[in-house]
Amino acid sequence: MKFEYKVQGGDFVRAGHASSEVKKILKQLNVEPSLVKRVVVALYEAEVNIVAHAYNGMAYVDIDASRVLVRLDDNGPGISDIELAMQPGFSTASSTVREMGFGAGMGLPNIKSNSDEFSISSEVGKGTHLEFVVYLNSK
Amino acid sequence: MTVLDIIKSLGLKVYTETVGMDREITGGYTSDLLSDVMGNAQAGTVWITLQTHINIVAVASLKDIAAILLVKGLEPEPNTLQKSLEEGIPILGTSKQAFEISGMLYQLLYSNR
Image 1: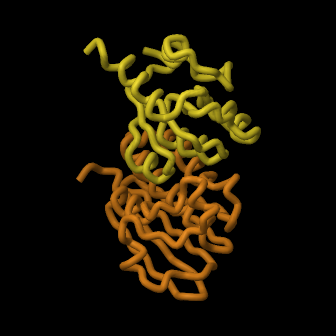
Image 2: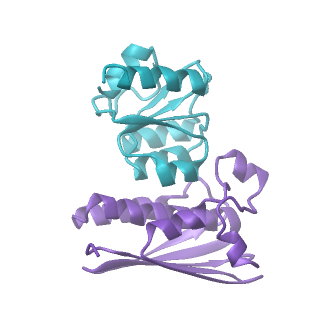
Image 3: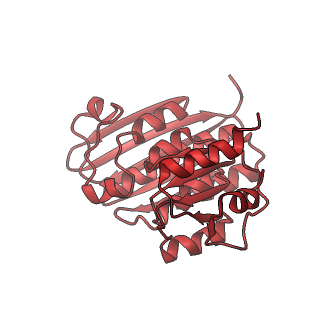
């Protein structure tokens, strides 16, 4: 099953829409709650990253019996140093975004720790591509 | 102990009277960083925070938080309130600051163990 969701940069009111939809779908599919949680936490963080940093983007969610594969592509400023961006606590978020309780530099580490496979690539001035997989069979 | 029990025991204000009152409380989590809550809060907890914007409802809903408790007399923004009613997440309030109300909730939940 494949689903796709638009994510609009700067639109904090709708941030979490894709995660909330995917949560409903996974619940209907009777996926184990702890796995649902891992998927939605990772997806929420990825959505917020696009809202906080990029101009717009898409979330593609592909579910089969063995795994949930999520791809997020955005048009945005990109990340010049991914290793640095992956460090817990590092953030380039604006002060407005930080005052909302985002931008603590925990987003990317949270995505990585909640997924079984994780990859990120980025081109400065173009955008960022992020992909993660959560296995549905305990392994 | 349910959401309604802690409202009565701690004298909390209720912004969302129609939802989630009989949900069982398993603990508390005090934080104003949304990613921290996303990463670390457990299902069924009361989330104590000063954040009042709409995203707290998304985080609470995704994490199966039992109730959001706003400190220092802060009130939820109108769209936060509306979203919480839709999602069935109770929003509570207290005039106390986070340290004090966290301590009171801790006592209430764990003092008899």
